Image (cartoon, rainbow, N blue to C red; front, side):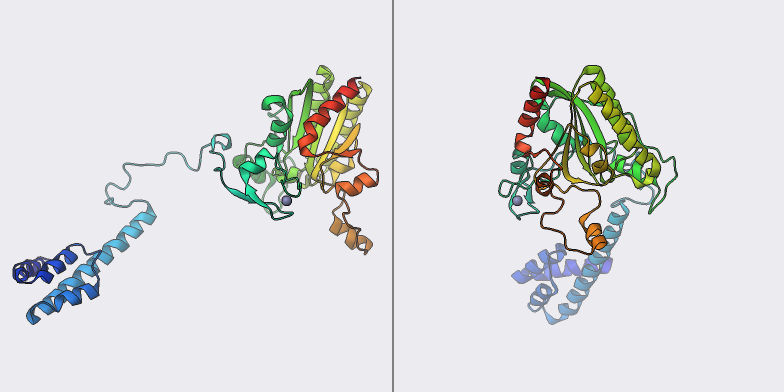
Length: 369
Ligand SMILES: [Zn+2]
């Protein structure tokens, strides 16, 4: 390097006569900005004797810079950029592994994010959709929402008390499909703050103290497991104790395969508990939302004093594809949609999400009367 440095010094001395020498030296000093073309142009204005040395110097500098950049890139990947071997373990050291921020503390989706209606392709912002209670402003498509949103919509000022959160699922059958049930549960708990496929909350809906159980589809497809059964039956006990009406918002694919017969036992257990409510003359309303299938629609989903549904919700026992393949016939238009079920006497009425709170409150007043 000393020799090259010498060359540079010589050039500086000799370049005083020619303004392009200075220009070239500036370029060489800032090696990341110079280009070979620039060097050649500048070199054309130097004496021929200098040309060889200039190009050699230029190439050496370029190689050195490239090597350093490659080293930096590798060091950056390894996460110890700019550190010598001795100091790599110092400074910043990750003590806890993974992301420790809980979902509730995470920042909300930034405003101004756009969303598209799956039914009519209408594009609007998430904020606009939220203000419209997640109903498409153009085609009235009811987007799927979770328990937090329903509680927010129904309870006065969004104030409610969540009950029975301490009951958790266990892998007592040691069931393994693609992964073990225990692992699946732990992964779901880590991803969300939802502890099982139903959340039960008590609060005021207008003038009425009510208990609402709402399923979350994102927790293993809102499937009915032993925890859901237990939470509903305890909710029924709470209703009996406080003489509060019960509303269950269904959104489920059916019974939970991983709990096998234990899931199916919940059907009888919940049905028994609901009959206790009937005996105590406490109203139970079942609201079916998109989708409500399998064990849910075969039991407490259809056992309400009133069975109501959201518009366009898919409700049934087996899915339309299975039925079509079994009976080998095309299904009628709108089959298993709430409008179709209303027409065929399975539902009492269909309610828009915007009118839900008013309707529930009116119903409770009528039941009391
Ligand atoms: Zn739409």
